[in-house]
Amino acid sequence: MPKPAPGRDFYIATADEIRAGRTTDIYFVRTLDILKKAGRSRANVVAEVTTGALPNSWPWGIFCGLEEVVHLLEGKAVSLWALPEGSVFPPKTPRGIPLPVMTLEGPYEEWALYETPVLGMICQASGIATKAARIRKLANGKQVLSFGVRRMHPGIAPLIERSVTIGGLDAITTPLGADLLGVPAIGTMPHALVIVMGGPREAFAAVHKYLEAKIPRIALVDTYYDEKTEALMAVEAIPDLSGIRLDTPASRRGNLAAIVREVRWELDLRGHKDVKIFASGSVDEKSIPALLEAGVDGFGVGTSLSNAPTIDFALDLVEVDGKPAAKRGKFGGRKDLQRCPKDGTYEIGVRTCPACGTKMAPAYTRYLDRGRVSAPLPDLAAIRERALHETERAALES
Image 1 (cartoon, helix red, strand yellow):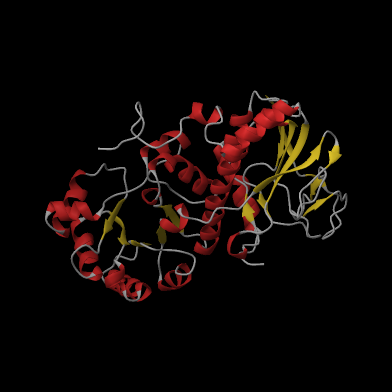
Image 2 (cartoon, rainbow, N blue to C red):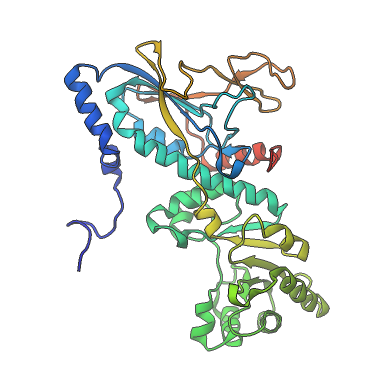
């Protein structure tokens, strides 16, 4: 049976392979070879990372993935300036100039092989973090759990869970993510437990008897019978039931908001107003408002998070040996990106905020100085707090 190359079982690049430039596009390898033979590989270049537009016309994104970029380029003769990770940014400044989220400077041969992985690290992470933040805002304070890792290769499960945590979600699901990120993994029961135990009553009784006491009891109530029926079975079998989860399959779903209302009514009627209702299964931005109105207390969101559209960042040279240079459609020369500390407005080369008149401040932090780490990388809690704070004042639509 065909399998990966000798010595490996999974199609995952190792850290050493990424650092060795093995995951770059081959034309960078060939370009570097040509430049070396032409005596131009040590040309000092400045490059900027920008995006001309965000997916689905989003008015803002969350910059995510910087920590990995710093680790990748550390030790190279490269200087790196960037927005702090977790920053909210628009695709363009008020004057219509693509906003550079990151700037690199150094001899081209020092980082030529890393353009591909650098972009991959921030494009996907920023897209997932942005999607998570949008869903969190729509959820209006209700709990949102990340169920997305099963939709993507397990090799990037930590990336997904870090990104959704930065975006503001309340919980992840994998033991590895919990260990790496220092946050708890959540989860009570799948449909498999009901099926193997022989039915919902038996499964709920087993959860009550055997699940660790410290773990909140949330029963999945749509395996065999009507959701109301299984919800009532759950409250009978689990005296300390915290909540029930609806994951009704599409073929049986109909109007999920209507199902939520019925279940809520039956629970309340029998004195179980404290039992929360969680909805999962194809939950996305479009379905959340109606579910909130129906009385949902929390959401499990999967595919729409892990399969979030990537932010289409590009890395372009804007200066060579001190002279402005850029391809067509790009703006040459190093940009002096400023930001208003009061309202968050970005602009290039402007000292007074065009929106409120406040004195602008440099938007960048210098994270690498010729390969040496020159600013501390914040921990996950600080990055998450930045993203939460900045998205509070950001509208979902422009």
